[in-house]
Amino acid sequence: MIRTYRADDWQQYRMDMYDPHRVLEPLEKETAVVDAALEALREAEVLPHTRYDHAKMLAHRQAVSELFDIPWTAITPRMHRLLYAINAVAQPKNMIAAGVFCGNTFIANAGAAVGPGACYCARDLVGVEIKPEEAARAEGNVRRIDPSGVARVVAADAVEFVAAFDESLDLLYLDADGAGGRGKGVYLDILEAGYDRMPAGSLVLAHNSVNLADRLKHYLEFVRDPAHCRSSVNVIFDSEGLEVSLK
Image (tube, rainbow, N blue to C red):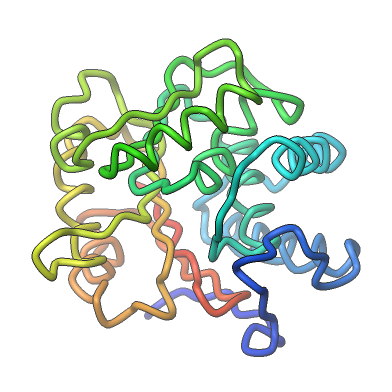
């Protein structure tokens, strides 16, 4: 059985990817939808609880709005809140986000540990972007929020970077595209590169679990197999989706 959380309005909830900070719905509704998704993750034992600081999340969002150069993004306000909340609950010491473009998806994860949204102390939070010019943009964006360097962005191939990462990997966020027609199929390559260094209880978050589900077929089969992940939930509250898996 595929575990799914699906908001009633997910097909109608749409954003302009060139206007990422536009308010799409009342804050109370956004919070309620994300809280329901978090509860579904708790019930599936992917998360231990659903508590996070809503005021710190909004402080984080305001900083991103004011300081980040975001040419476009497919990360909706709901998704941004969910990524922040998952990291705030799980509090990964080491996190890698693969395929971060301008850094918006990376800071949605890392913002729970750095900047005005920080609610815990992390060791190493790394965004990986294969295009050097975008990695440079992302690093510049992140530095405006996190002067400490705990969160950083590197220009690298995600499979190679994850394979060479010599620390335990507590959370892996996947949003990369593979070369040579591989596309989102590279998710499984990245996960397999780091799987052995992911301790029990680590999380894998895969964006595009809805709109690119066909390209993610082998990845989704892998994380939904109890031999590989103890639990996995497809969160559907926008047209992109997020598969959240617990090793």
